[in-house]
Image (tube, rainbow, N blue to C red; front, top):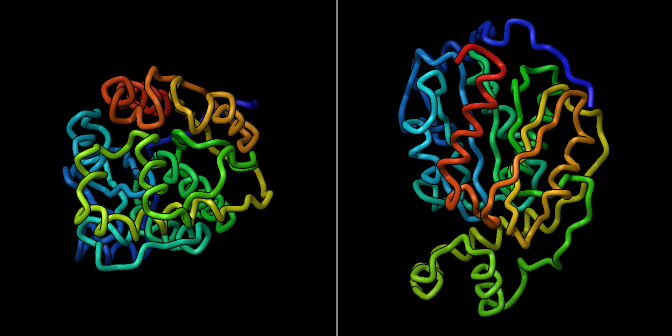
Length: 275
């Protein structure tokens, strides 16, 4: 991999008139949230969740990370305060919307984190930003998802009967048993979970130019869904450095190894500017 130095990584982008208007009326919106606003921070971190997850997964990150980082979880339709909206089932239209939303908040340098399904969305929306010559993330954090060009390891699961679908979710370990055994909660969650898994199962990689931003790649040593080697293969998609960090946990190491993950993100972010 070729590694390039970043010139003045914390020089703010000049906001357009539209951006200034958005920032002058509503600081954040339904898509881009900010549980712990930090306007003085020189860097924004946008976060995208795993299948079925919402912005609340990242609520504590604003307090756990450096005060130089403003954490902005992205809230996708179909969950939490947006539960009445249908969840998307196709990566590319959703990535187009996300790219346009992030550009509203690109008045300062930013990085982008995605876990599992979120990593796939983060990758595709960054490709769109690059094609549009829009500001790119100074660093892209891709977590717990195989490189886009690799074939899926498992068979599609979005159309499985409920009982089998729930058992597959149980094996992933991302949802507590008290949720998976609570029928009313499941009735509430299953449509969004199936939509998210449809999005993942139907994804087909289309070759494109390599990204002109460095990658931080995060894997779980005990992850049965994706191996560290499959995550390391993301290095084929950047012109810059790609570094792999392996955590002890499984697919949801962002919960089991949360403190170590925060330290890794903080350390990587510090490498791109004076945090």
